[in-house]
Image (spheres, rainbow, N blue to C red):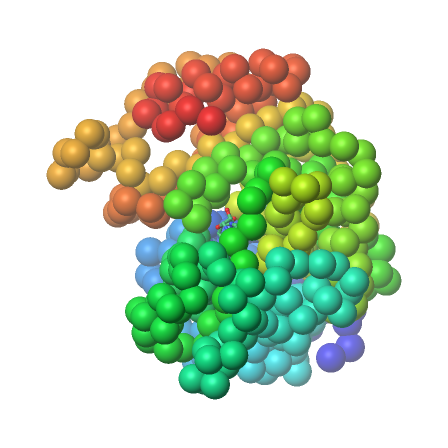
Amino acid sequence: MPEALPLLPGAPSPHDGTRAVTLGVLGGGQLGRMFVHAAQALGFRTVVLDPDPASPAGLVAHQHLCAAYDDAQALDALARSCDAVTTEFENVPAQSLSRLASSVPVSPSGEAVAVCQHRALEKAHFARSGVPCVPWALIQTDADLASIDETLLPGILKTATLGYDGKGQVRVERLPDLGAAWAALKRVPCVLERRVALQRELSVVIARDRAGRCVHLPLQQNLHRDGILAVTEVPAPDLPDAVAAQALDAAEAVAATLDYVGVLCVEFFLLQDGTLCANEMAPRPHNSGHHSIDACDLSQFDLQVRALTGLPLLPPRLHSPALMLNLLGDLWFAAGGAAPRTPCWDRVAGLPGAHLHLYGKVEPRRGRKMGHLTLTGASAASARALAAEAALLLGISPF
Ligand code: ADP
Ligand code: MG
C-alpha cells in the first residue's frame, strides 16, 4: 500500500477528497477512547470498529462500525473510510490487520501484533533481541508436561494466548500439582514460568516511527494487585540510572527487531538480586502510560497518533511527578453492598492536581477497569501525599 504520509489533520483525505483525513482504530475499549480523544484534539476524524454497541471508544468516535473484528465487510468499510488504521488491543486477528493493510496503511503490523499475542513467541522475541526473561517452558502436550524441569517450580502457569489482568494464570507450588493446574486451564497451550522474587516492576512505553527513530515516556514503576495494575508512579523512585538505561535499551531493541511502527510497551521485572527481566509486551499504549495525559507534554496517545500519521515524534517531557490509580469496579460497591453506588467524585474533584478519567462503562463490575485517576504534584513527595489522600477518600488500599 503506497503511503501518502504525513497525514495532516483537517486536510482532505488523499484517498477520498469528499472527507477529511480519518484515522481508524480496531477495538473500542478505553485505550481506543483515549486514542480517539487525542486524534480529535488535533482535528482528525475517527472511526472505531468494535462489536459492542456501547464500547467506550465507539461512543466518542465520529463513526462506530459495530461488527466483529473478522467481519470482512466491516473491515473493508473501515479501510474505505480511513487513511490509516491502528489497533488498541492485541487480540485482533492478525488476518484482519493483513486484510486492512492491503488497502490502507496499518501500524503496528499484523506480524508484530501476532508476536505479542502469544507468550512463547513473545519470549522467543525477547531472546532474539538480547533481552533476558525469567526461565520458562512451553506446555502443549503430555510429553512437554512430563519433561518439565523442576527448577521452574514454584511457578506460574499462564495460557499462551488471551490472558490479561492476571486472568488465565494458575500458581503451581510443586511439580506433582502441574498436571491438575494445566487441566484447570483446559489443557490449552501454556507457558510455565518460574516464580521470581520481585524487587519492583517497571515498564517502558516507546514510540517508533517508520525511519526507526524512537522516543519514550519516562520509565514507570508499577504495583500490581491480584495480577491487575493498581498504581503507577513516575518518576520511578530511587531507580539506579544503570537500570533505567538497561530497560530503555531493551525496549528499543525489542521494537527494532520487530521493525515496529507505533507505540509499544515493554513490562519488566527487577528481581531482588538486581537482574532486569522482560515480562511481556503490548503493541499499543498501556495502562501504565496513562499518567502521560496529565503529567507529560505529549501523551502516549499523542505519540500513537503521530506514529500512525507520520507526524514528528518528539520525546515527551514529564512536567509533573505523578501517580496513577486504577479505578476498578470494586469502588462502586460499598463494603459488601450489592447495589452499585457512585464513588465520591465531588470530593476527588476537590483535590488540586487530581485528574479523573472515566471510560463511560455503564456497568461497574468487580475487577473491571472503569477509569483511572492521575495525581500530579510539584514534587514527587506531594504527588505521593495527594495519591494517598485520594486512595483514602475512595477506599483504595494504601501503597
Ligand atoms: P497479564 O498478561 O495478565 O498482565 P503478567 O504475566 O504480566 O500477566 O502477570 C501479571 C502480574 O503477575 C505481573 O505484573 C506480576 O506482578 C505477577 N507475575 C507474573 N509472572 C510472574 C513471575 N514469573 N514471577 C513473579 N510474579 C509474576
Ligand atoms: Mg502484565
